[in-house]
Image (cartoon, rainbow, N blue to C red; front, side, top):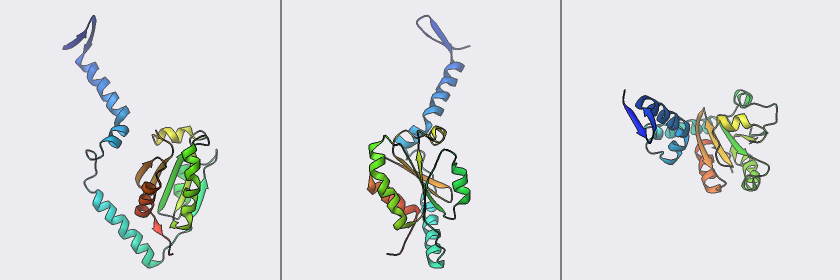
Length: 175
């Protein structure tokens, strides 16, 4: 059995391999955010084009949904939101009451109902710590954009980045 010794402590290569795999698994979402080009879906352009085609078809056929703002309370669940909404575009904002950028961007987030056909969901990570862990939220605010279950996330309160994602994933209302 091959061993690596550091001082008087020896490890087998098998154990080191297991530890490395656990570390990679734990940090995989961070690695994907730091090096997106290595994990890029080769069909991303195709998916983006498909999303645009669906949105355009909905506009032409006038299949316009009701825009809704939902502040997820203690008893609410995201599964209920996904199953009950008529919109194919859902935007989830993860924030907290104590987070200044979250509070600053909240009105902008709510006002998107006036411009897009979308379901907006506001989640307080202090009330829903399990959702915070499930979605691997590391920065506040974090926005997740869903279109027919394809998703993208935007971290921070940069309105330009958020607006680009709204334009990509949501059907714009006529002006």
